[in-house]
Image 1 (tube, rainbow, N blue to C red):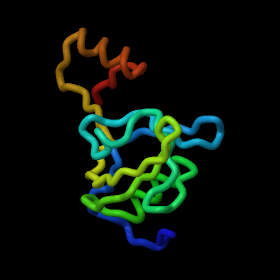
Image 2: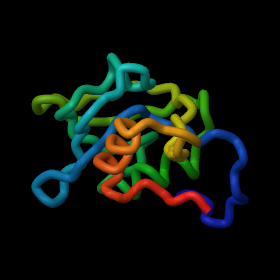
Image 3: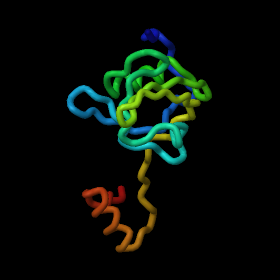
Image 4: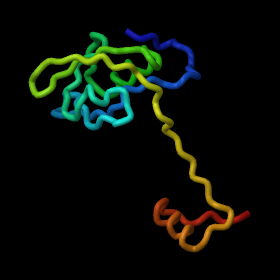
Length: 130
């Protein structure tokens, strides 16, 4: 089990390089494998995840917690899964998670086309100057 009292981390979070979804109410299935991620060439969309390093992974939260709280970047984990009915396991070396925050900063003097694009994309009016 993982340690809930672990201190805050300043190092990058470890990442499997996959997106998952729950199917049939109880199956954790690989939805997408990132081509630049550590699971590329090992896991496939449709693989049904069962365990990481022998611990059951029943849902996305458990998977995320297990990877981010119990492991570091460059550690290797054993992922157990079913692929088309065959039980399989792959060793995946965790990579640093890509940044997940984005900041949109308006240009100082955009043209009308840029303002219109901003407003369409964000569905909000162009910010007024103070």
